Length: 124
Image 1 (cartoon, rainbow, N blue to C red):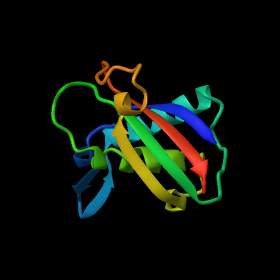
Image 2: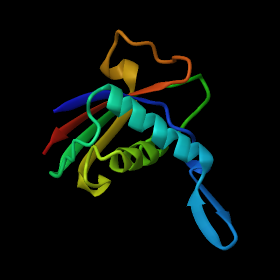
Image 3: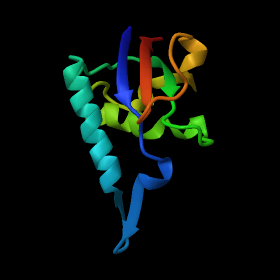
Image 4: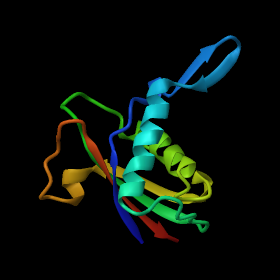
């Protein structure tokens, strides 16, 4: 089992850009990938190379009180975990759950400046 923290991702609407007949990753998405890589490196989890099916639980501390769709929060973090080599590919995720962090960890506040993700990855 792995437990780690990740920075709060940008909106799913800001991941992709289109221009000159091509679709490409936005600067915000690239910056987020780099931030995840640095975070995983600091936590000693870079390049783990997990290659078995996993269950992922993401507990979210929101950055503010604006309404958000929690189901939009998993795309970029999962792609970033693939990019940094934590797992072989995010197609290994067989079960993913997302909830507000204070529901799982009552000691946490619901809102923190910049937001945060608490991720637990368990082999199935």
